[in-house]
Length: 557
Image (cartoon, rainbow, N blue to C red; front, side, top):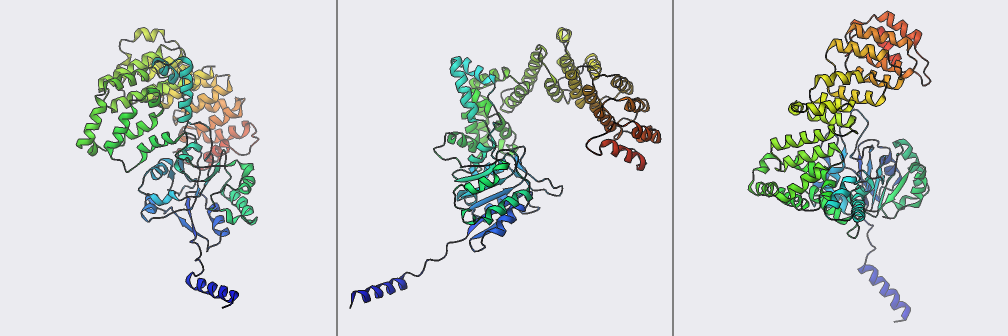
């Protein structure tokens, strides 16, 4: 047989034995739409239906929709998440009727656990349409207490500062770091380093992207220079997921010990105990996660023998307890110290009486400091919400005598001192903006209940000369929903002579919440219209007040 004929015959036999390769399975584009559907619909409209299939993971009205997707065995090649993300803790919607959200903690759980192996494991690309989703700014920093702790542990000052810097970088907790750890090994993660465009704006940019013939790039796992260029004016950036060789790999492993739902309670507690053996500077950086985990162990689990044994091992670890409490007492921020004290009690390291004593010790330390401020007042009032720290005033007469600052008075007033309470009320009408701010914080916790005190404050506010402090004082009074005629009349007399639009708006903010029955409404409406200062930004709260006074026959709710 001629050579050419043999070749043709061989080709025919090969064709029979090996039919044409079947078309590749379509890529799965998973979408999580908790706010705007604009981005999702643009992708769906632009990608060929025979090459891409879409699966919306959110099931409206079902809180466990992510777990439902896991049970269904959904495997995603591309993931598109649309939602607001300003705070960095969850994707959420601005629609009043929307109930669905996507917490970052839940994303960590899915990423760290093997309970949902398909959802994230084969991802090639992730698109995060939300503000700051890839913001690289640190959410936490290693404060001076970290370096001091390391010095006490035997490090030189220079080494302590270097180690504190390393810890700060490791635990920075930026949105970018968290997304890289959640989407481990994903080649391309798109997001925004600052403000993201609204859904319709993002959709119009995506339309231009797909119109330029870029459909083949989706799901390729390669960062698209074209997409980044089009979104460059609105801060789009790209990152790749962390890998086993990543410097943060060990940190991800630690985080997953808290998030991996394959681990039993006793296994997680064993990790917590191991963590407590490390330098307390690092334990401090894990405080958020330790707090959350320590409050989520169900009582029924605590009673199980293995869990009880693990908890008992922590409670009886004397060296760890002493190192922890020493670090807590040296914390720069009183709020951190209080949190560490509460956590020590949950670990079984402090009895109720010992916890109480530690809190009183912290209060004494703050009263001895000249730099006490509004944050201290907020903290002490919060801690003493139920009056449990009322005995803190006993045997503290010397401390009270030395405490001349308004912040010190605020702390003592939070603990129940009537004399300090009077000083804080006077501070509300002080020319010092800092003093007014402290009084404002105090009154959020301890509103004025006495009518005579309300009248004195109203008269004092009317006499203030600093408009900024006056606005702050009025805002503090607004929460009281005034019904006292004399106080309201004092404020209505202030409106015509106010030199600041901000002051007039603050007065309106009080009156709109007040008892209308106590106001001469026709006269007030005339005063508002005649004496209001011109607003450059259109209608405001004063217009709302006028309208309410004219049409609402009942007191404001």
